[in-house]
Image (cartoon, rainbow, N blue to C red; front, side, top):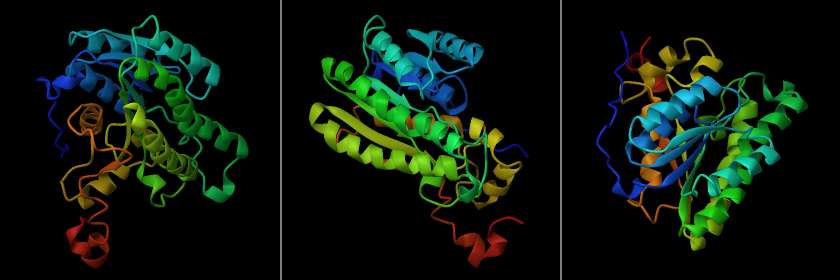
Length: 278
């Protein structure tokens, strides 16, 4: 049986996003693509960043333009400071400015190992993309946001930052560091008119992470989600659009935990095994 899909929204929900200029790091596929498309549906112009997936990024940009906004794909390795500097110089200058930064680019699942067996080279590369990338990107984006009167930064986290997940140490620890950075940036940038928040989604069915982790994980998680289905990329995109809008000006330094009630019901399958599937 196919799990129900979240509806796609065609009518803009947040008028404040119309005309804003958004940079989505890691925006070519999966969650990043869904975020780019949702922001475009809300009327925001989107710069789709990618590292290697040129065709996918160009396709996402084309689909965003079909929604009536400006959109283009720009290559930059988020783990490379020089490439990020080039990307943001273009976004903040010739492209027209930056109002929104979504730090979605991530890596680390390609070498799943227990923490005690992780290799230094892999850990450093994971930290470069998952922590130092968003850190540097935010530093680079701030002057352009200030020039336009403020902005919004959204960092994409992971349940592995808060709970143990087997063979997930490189990603989990890097995302935990990003969760801490989210707090520091939020406090320091709020007086400058820039809101910083985060989204930590549960198991996202249809994401790149789903294909990179363990087989059948979606099927194993789904019976334990009180909402009746796993999170989908469009759910994450909806939360990001809300955080980027002007609807919640006093929500600063927070993490939206988007998991359909999975964590809230985590003890249910243990105390009442018959309630959580087979």
